[in-house]
Figure 1 (cartoon, one colour):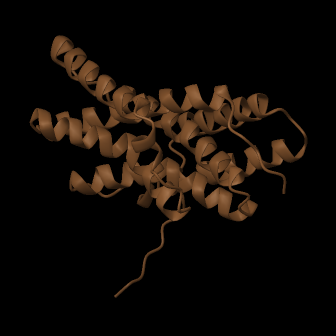
Figure 2 (cartoon, helix red, strand yellow):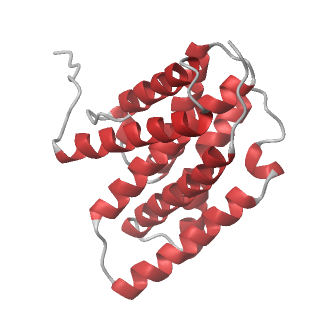
Length: 210
């Protein structure tokens, strides 16, 4: 497996994903009526938690958002902007949260997978790192808000991230350029997640009768 190196497309998409997840964390905090410190904290956990977990699992130190403050600054700015926007409109549209979350899922799936490939990890582990990057922040967000994490419900969520990571690796192995492969994989995950929301796709439920 040859080593890959993240290009500018993934980097700027990642910053967009950080902003998107920060928006979801801020809106969730608003639904729970947290104070401004709680809002900022939840937005940071949502936006940076997945990447931090990935770096710890891969023993990649210092953790990315600590060594490069851009992600931190983008997350804080997005959170503050969302608070101002929400106070101005005095309303909340659930679709905004879902669309932002879908975009963050798509971008972080590719980013996490790409970073694992840079470390020459096996493709199967790269997929796991991609999914962890994409879903861990949202899981922490939901747990802190006393909600069942979205990824543990019947929503088609993590499974789309898995498929997106596999698609990204496959495209790279077909000698497609990193920029094109990342764009296709991001679009695939985003469109698939939006379709799952629109058509209410659900995974089978496991239930044991007492």
